[in-house]
Image (cartoon, rainbow, N blue to C red; front, side, top):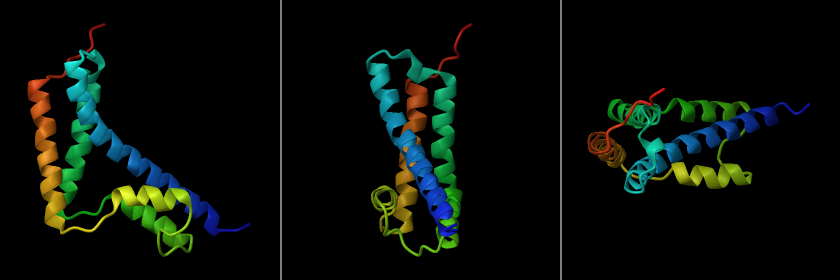
Length: 134
């Protein structure tokens, strides 16, 4: 049995999870704002708002402290174990990694994440979450 293949598949799965989390953070903010304008009650459920705040909070904390995202570390470890040195390869590897990895000075990302988190915090104040009543 070819040993590198399971590692590559796991690395692809981690990359898909990473993209899903990024989409949750970005699209989540859009949904909170648009959902409040359109009176979608679910966008203010406490669990959704707290999950969204925690997700961007982790990203900001990682950038402030210079910590590499554990998902990135895991993906790279899996790719190394699978014998891959770059992202060149299948569709998932090529296109999804292009969404997440691009060149800019680290301070640009820290500033961007921090401003985004401030906008998330502002939406918590402007559109307060509600507990679901039973």
